[in-house]
Image (tube, rainbow, N blue to C red; front, side, top):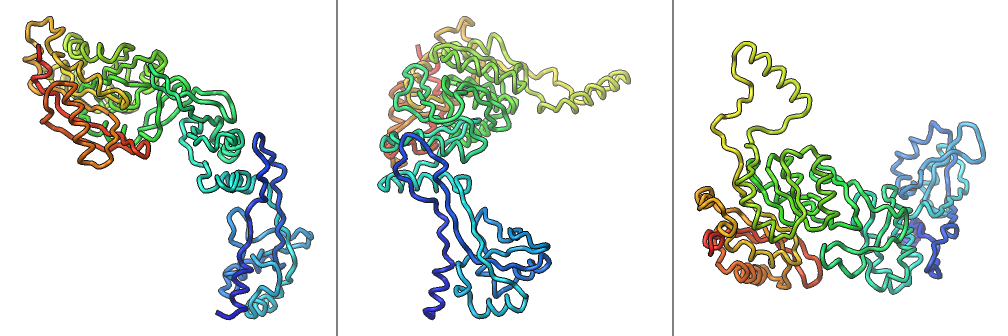
Length: 464
């Protein structure tokens, strides 16, 4: 490439970065983010703009910077004129072919000033301009979104700048109304994260949409992790509509509500009264009142009572998908018409179909300690059986257990061996039937989250 060609390429590179203000720490001064850039522009009649924009000769000079228009009104007020902005500072930066083309089309070359302010730059642009140079490589613009809340997990080196970081993220994300940062300590009893407000409204009650369901909850008082939505979907897809699911640590319902929307009957429990409250709220909001029974009790008690409770108070059978209100209305009209003509109903409920009185699955989504509750399954079929062995006759197939846990073993073979060993130690028996180990995600450099699924050994359930 000729020296002139290299010079032209260098001149095409425009510095659109914000001015540097690394003195900021406790407060964000948006007014200092101003920048003026002078570029060359071609003044032409409005009807000629398309010709210039489509020209092969000019293509590499036409302004193509994000959020900057390539064609603007002529600020001089000339009637019917437009400015086609070029990403070069002077006429000398243009190739001879480009200058000839502009002359042939009677274009007048003029200077034009682009003025940028705080609103132009992204959150990462602003943080790169205010944070110390040693912190730039890990600029914390990533966050989880739950409803209107942005949830950060700042490393300690960024904490002195947390207020500025929060304000920038709030400014640059219109849907976000509240920015919070996770504090290291976790509520030891109910396992939700403590958090501090960095910017925005102190409103922590959110409405979050997931799996075609609506969830309302106080993000500061319950556990919710938006990064687990694919795992919620994965597990619910394993459920059959006729299943009865016992959700031991249900939270606000990320498994229970979508499962019920699928047709499953669900016992949903959480020890946290706030979680139980919002769980009940979400059951109503998602129109699954007939299919989900909420409770607020210790996980062990819930496990030991669930099987007997379902047997003594069974759920109605599943017989068809839930219809929309319009289809339900049409179905009722059709049924009434058919009944008048002594015909069978459109969707007859088989008279021999029994109610659902058997728990088919247990979900244990408390990865920090769920394995510790597995001992509650020892003797679960006999400890509170007041029916003289009826449970043994009902359960020709034992329930599936889906239990979440953490492991420090990062290699799959070692991780699975570690999890299996801990499960078998808790239940006092080997797991052999329908065993599956699913890696959910990595939660820390030396910590992975798994879901171990297995069929409850019959010898464990009926142990005396």
